[in-house]
Image (cartoon, rainbow, N blue to C red):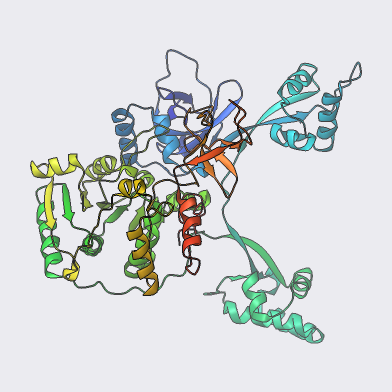
Length: 613
């Protein structure tokens, strides 16, 4: 009986598609596995199997799948239920959810390749552009369109490609492009001929006149713990061997050429790292201990609990104790934060307690690393605690027991664009319920909807009203800068009181943080004569001026423009900056306090993974 599979494709299409299984593939496929499927006339996509069945579709003739990528599922059953809920609740397609959920390294792409036809004979001289493309293809018969554009220096090659296709000088080939490559290292072992103690002694005698080669061989035997029985032999990397022996690459190569040692590639994870020794948990204060027990009591009757604790009341310490309780029960924990910037400080705190059991997942990680975290979570050796931002809700979990949503009121939990436009807090509550897990929402300023549910008994409510060690709340002073500006008493953007407080802090060798919710130098520039303001041609919003890059940028679509030297509306040359961003504040502070060390932290200065640290 012929078998068929229903497949999700990473495209915003309303339904799943059914493909037929070629003979011999039936045994190797199961729901949740990735497969390569043809879609449209020449495209290939990585689909995910959701169902294997024997019912052919009535509306269309099925195509065969091209390749099976996985021997075991990468999408678990509960995850798929979660995907279906997301697509239904947030009014998007399963393809949208699939595209957002999986790291791009697990979604192989189809890339158009142009292939040279060696049998082509021109009946007349070709135009120069077409001849140039054929010359490049004769040197390298298979190239993608982007490669040809780069090599030829010509733009818009598609009409040229189309013309050569019609003349049958070239043909188009679709090839699957794999963007994820496992990380490997070169390791060393004795060749098969020397796996004998007698032969090894003979080889040492032969190397008597090559002491450097002999030293490398001796160091290998020492590092690997080699023995004639072949038991418990440790694998040794080439780098480790050369570092330990202090010998050059050329000496090692001589041993390989003599077939004494041989090298091989071994796949290693990107997730290995040095973790400090773990430390015991801190003792909770009486107020924290009371809140801790109230949360546990609440979880006996309700699946969601809101922890409303004032700033610096020690909520994180309560989370750590709750995580410890869940881990003792053999369950996993998902700890959500709204911003990547927050993960850096909390990572170190959790790593000191949980060590290698903690995994971190966010978009600043290289894609290959995110692939490996996903694959590790599919095994029985997955991380017990995942610390991450909103995309972490898509990770596979086998035994989820607790979800913590820290700063649950934050708007950063809402994905605005593209689809699925989901709220990670609400999605996390649903994810936890599907696993039979509990959810803890923590905040000093609850969102209106969460507080309403807590007050009406839908959620549990635990309140922590005192700060840790009775520390006083900070004193807040409001300054009327509008009145000060009218009296012309402002220095740049700073009031006299603010400058006085900064100066006092610096004199006492203290640090100062200034917050401004606009990046760039100025939110807009304006013509003094006619009031013209440059706007983005895509978004129709005013462009932000970035002084360091000397360009105008749209903070919605990212498009950049050159700074005009004159107003295009009236020809005036007096273009003024309006407003101020973090870049201008940095400049002004450096001028007012030249002795102070000043650093700016915004999206422009923290684009890399380690920039926050």
